[in-house]
Amino acid sequence: MLKPFEPTLPLPPQAPNWDENLRFAYSEVDAFWLTRWTSEAGWEPGRLYEHRGATLELSPAAAVLYYGEGVFEGLKAYRTRKGNIVLFRPQDNARRLRASAARLALPAPSVDMFLEAVTAVARANARWVPAPEKGSFYLRPVLIGSGAILGVAPAPEFLFYVFGCPVGLYMGGDRLIVLSSVHRAAPYGTGAAKAAGNYAGCLRPQKIAKEMGYVDVLYLDAREDRYIEELSGANFFAILYDGTVVTPALGSILPGITRDSILTIAREVFGWIAVERPLSLEEVLSDAVEAFYVGTAAVLSPVTVINHKGKDYPIGDGHPGPRSQMLRQALVEIQLQERPDLWGWVVEVA
Ligand SMILES: Cc1ncc(COP(=O)(O)O)c(C=O)c1O
Image 1 (cartoon, rainbow, N blue to C red):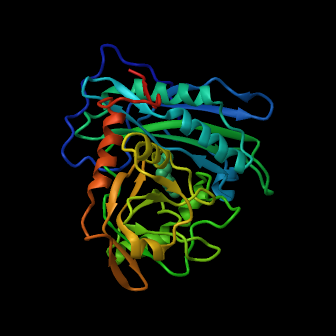
Image 2 (cartoon, protein in one colour):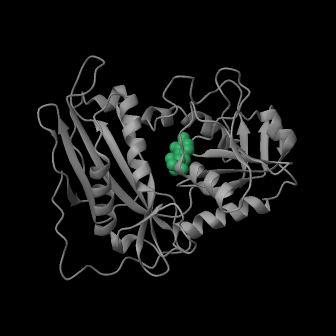
Image 3 (tube, rainbow, N blue to C red):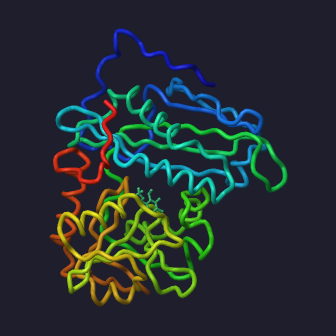
């Protein structure tokens, strides 16, 4: 059931004073945004609906339910210390959603429609955007085949919606494991798209990793089982003995927006050499002095141990490194408007 969102006046009380342990978990807030696409009419104008108690009614034959016709995005609204609400590179999320949709032959919202939706959700839920030291407001744009079909074909109807909720940090552990006999993506597959099915395939390996005491799996390439790809929800970086910052080249990995930001910050803020190229596990285990993973949800988390074939290999001296910390701090300061944003990445919405 969907009820149009009517902002209540006078405004509802302030959101709670977040406790220290705001987790990366779903909660309902005030409003979410939704629009529908049909082959006859294209995209309807979207609007806000009540988030609390909202459910979507779908046919049992909705294409997303069994053919996995769904792609999504993840970005954050941050409250700055001045009290503004800002988004980080939302146009890039809009473009990536369009690229993911194109890979799966789904109709995609325009960049403008995407920006309208994420801005509306951040503004309508402003009271749920935590102060910077408490957390942030995660926005989840979703595009799904909601129409009923039987054969493998694009659905006759799609929904594009954006919901959000306050979150703390995602994952946060520093131990990764390489598992044999499991890959996340194949060459020319869907690894570069933020396709729902990519994540379903990561659940079992992730469960095994966690049971063994590692925060996530470090996936290798499917062709040679040798080159590092990424984690189930974050991109990987290493800093080598000679100071070069290296991240795996694009191809079957998600083109992360944090990944691109870290490459840019390494080069343009710190003047370091930062390259995208094939990066073998062997090279990381022998030559890396620091390693870390990055993503909107994960921000930048150091990696201190990688397990391979049953053996724990420390990275560098086994402690988080100074350059990872410098990159993280610069990224967060840019996101919160506490350091010059030379690239026009930060968009104020309130
Ligand atoms: C598979 C995967 N890789 C990398 C990332 C990091 O991408 P971004 O920095 O755009 O959040 C994500 C998170 O969205 C992801 O799901």
